[in-house]
Length: 168
Image: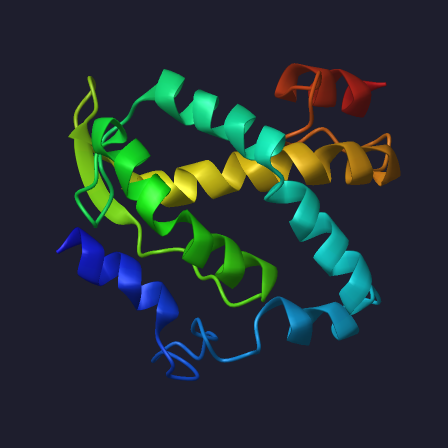
């Protein structure tokens, strides 16, 4: 089952039922770059930096350190290294071509101490590898451009600082 779902990244259909571009269609990142003003070459340089070996190794170490539950494909962190060795060339190619789409997120509900449930989304291990790889490349480039008044999901900033700034 894991291999079949991983091979879904190489699908040739153009869109899914939600209208998203599917792998192998030639759309994806290329179509979006024209709309946001960046050239295809700039987007490709960012993705090449993201899939560069040392960047991916750093992201891989984070995934292994964090462990976590398997996603919808059932692939565990312990099983990930051999899977990645066998499938990385195809995944890398899909990323560089702008054809990679993350897998569906596995929904898990956990009980809250005061009652009720909290819903979590568990990405696949592969998607948990790609996310920090992209973050490590994009954050240094885009962080300096953010507004000084922005506090959400920023390094060294938090909600308490946002409240202090709003009071001032």
